[in-house]
Length: 440
Image 1 (cartoon, helix red, strand yellow):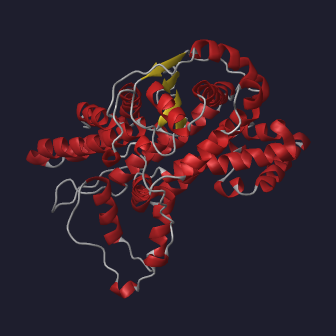
Image 2 (tube, rainbow, N blue to C red):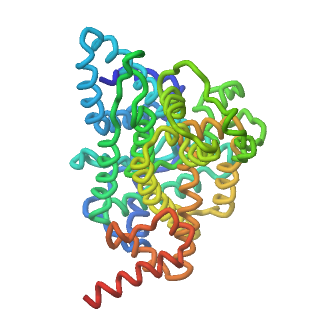
Image 3 (cartoon, one colour):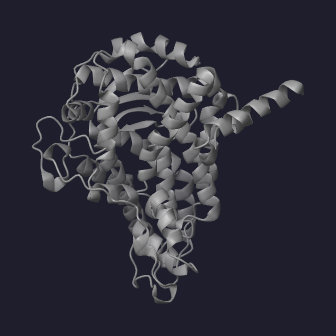
């Protein structure tokens, strides 16, 4: 159904470079040195050996993730194919057109992300027997260290601690991979394609947007543990920075999209969604919006701010599942962010200033880039780092690393989105549960 050859060509174009750049650090030696230290601090021991680190190009990273997406979306493709089969003589053209459109969307997002990813503990959540990989995008590591004006070796060591923490999480918590994968499968079961009689393969009820949201949260969230470079990793070695194409090293205005809803308070009687049809993610969103009985566009502003265009076409069931996945990913990412800072004073020479530089970079995206992140639903991904780290830091301050590790006791112990902003409330809940289990 999805033309994955088209997805790969689009991703390669969006990635802009296939150069494999040496980060200048022996990652094999670094991994061997850091694995026991990360395991000791987290009190997590992986059941299998941590995979050897691999330095890949942007295109190499994109191809690895498109392979994972192809496996993940196969059930959705099957359902879409069944629907098209019922359209008679139009089945072939409709299937080809929809497959190419979805492939272009997935390729564009994956290629865009390949410019931002520093490292990834690549883990298939659907194919549970697939071996994990420990990937580092050399061009992005070198580019970000340069634009942050920090010591490159220190920066690579710091990022390596983060990735190895993900290896401890998914290798040392027996139920975590299956739990996140189960939520993802449950989400994908809600994604379906509806055909509109007047327009052939129109927008879906659950939507291409919902499929894209799942693809992002799975490909760049649960199991993937992607570390993003905030404003983009800059050009690969040998590239010339170009402001027109958004290279980080080319500068740009320090503007911010504020998320202010004041412009969304138009009178409902005069509020109209635009006519016409538009394909893909944006078309699905507009079609869904037309069908909603909206008392106030503020609700849409909230959804858009939290999940981008995809959130506008999600059903209530999908939003609830996505919130559960996002809460889980926030604590997974926050845990890794906490560990990299906790161990950095001992493991990372010239650590001072790395956190400040990275946080400032993540916060300094230009207005066009911030809008693009929201359109793609990636803004929540960036908030996961901040919210999750604040939660984990607060819990460790209150109850130590042992207190934070209560999150790994069972799936029910993971915090909700609300509890991420109430660490003491979460601690009280898990303590109460622990007490009841002991008494029973």
